[in-house]
Length: 272
Picture 1 (tube, rainbow, N blue to C red):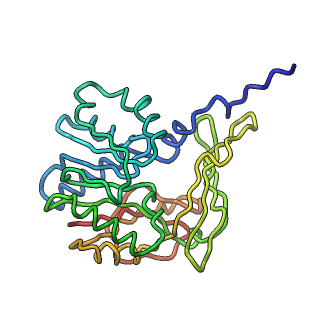
Picture 2: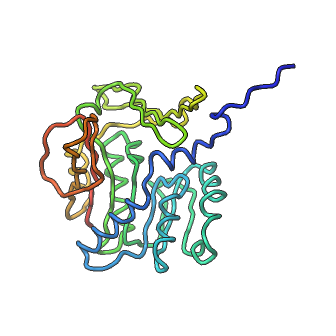
């Protein structure tokens, strides 16, 4: 009997790899706090993280300030359980008391009013029809306090429509973003995240996404149709010294127009 070989892929946890390669919770929280204070003249206290997955951002929020409260919502029981075991368990007792976890559909869930809602990592793009997307934004508007703000992110650029694979070397593994297919009639694309390791093992299709590639103008229009008073695109600035196709520098500034580029990332700041 041959003993199966232990590989780096078999020993890895895909959720930990995702948090390390995709999320930058500290930067997201810093941006939310900064923009909210600039626009509302006060510090936001309550945050709702939609499509929260492992609740990484919600946990980061309650750790950031003693007065912060968070609601984390996802429909997937398994990923919520992982988040409880690996992220929530790292919080202090007082921090855990300021975190509410809900397994439910973001289209129908009812929560207490909050200062801000975040739907990041393009998660809300699962709503492929305009009417359903507008309904989602309308639901969020209802749960925001009178001066509340919704924070979204989005990507664009001419490479967004291509079938391609992009690799990024990280500490101990390679992150692979795979735009496997794009349908120009429906706007629907199929994407995957793979993880590769030095021993040539791989976690293939660790994460799978079927969603619509929404454009910045479409999203702004639907947000306004949903009753929001204003939406501002904060576009990531470019590092002119970089030779990479995507050369964002992590700094976001308000923009009403931009030059064509292979890859663009932005926050959409939607004021109730």
